[in-house]
Length: 112
Image 1: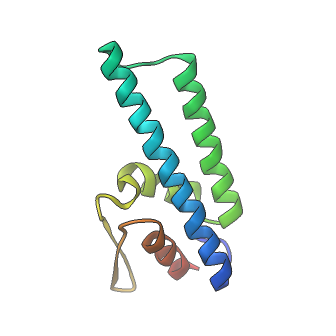
Image 2: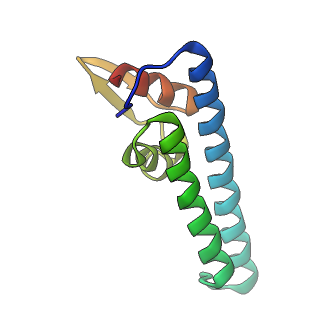
């Protein structure tokens, strides 16, 4: 849930920030898949642990700068695959299909 109201300019910044988060998540995922493919096993190493820690820290930073809760961001990233699954959320009987950063931010604004 969003902790404060925001302006249109802030909303655009949030959309850009969530877009960067989505890009980083997909790059990390592609890196893990490529590395696993080359090695033939799931990879757990200091490099991947560092990447995961840095990503989680970035999620926390985005939460702090936008006011969107960490739980909501993690739902968007992991459960809804950054909007690629197109999951639906409902507020006051109004449905929001979350298909990417813009629809996610618009949904979060309605919670404010």
